[in-house]
Image (cartoon, rainbow, N blue to C red; front, side):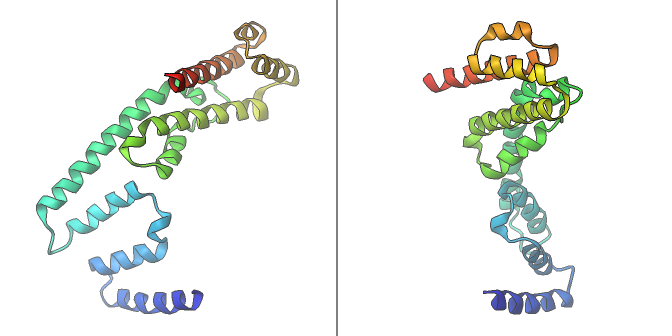
Length: 188
């Protein structure tokens, strides 16, 4: 397989050198950089729209439909991000990483179809919570505070919040509310 890849890549690159500005050359170069099955499909859609738009045999109605579809789905993604913002502990805790959009893009890379919106929202919240708790453990929390936090989580007792410092209260309450909300949605 490696020999076939090398042979094909060599000959396809030769095609590219004849007319590097052609659509075919751009598509070949793009395909050789990273195979299609390793790319995020929605991001690739935008790239293909741009390439298709430059073709001479473009079907305008198809191009407009592709752009419309892309923009509608982008609107879904924006709405999903807006519902997740309250779980962005990175913005509320000065020491924590603010990685909400990156977490959302991770979930988008695994399930990009609009029908998986609730899955993306739930998993982005999970990633954001894990990141904030990781930062509390790695960067900010003292051993005594971490033991109180662990004890509160182990007992799953909202009263444990009284013993925690303010930054841990925020994290514990966010975790507590998220898990209870998720359990309620599953039971519903």
